[in-house]
Image (cartoon, rainbow, N blue to C red; front, side, top):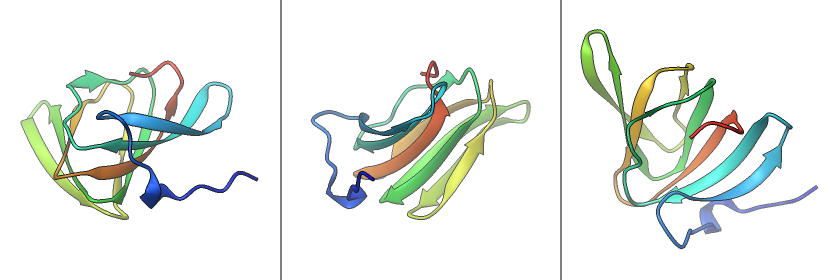
Length: 103
């Protein structure tokens, strides 16, 4: 067992992460950020859960660009190939479960 306190984690840079677990092809990471990421598409599914703070998740589909505001305790499941970018509203801590080779 390896305890951790998500609310204590602060990265030295935006999107810094702490590896919580590695399941071979899949990782579980705690991220800290106060800056947007970049538009991207994952190579596999992703689970994105806000633990602390708020995040505006932008995504694009055939109908255009959309934004969903996620508060602590809320998350999204992103399918492989979905184009998206996370924009924190201030500082945020986020739990991300994804394939190891995802960006």
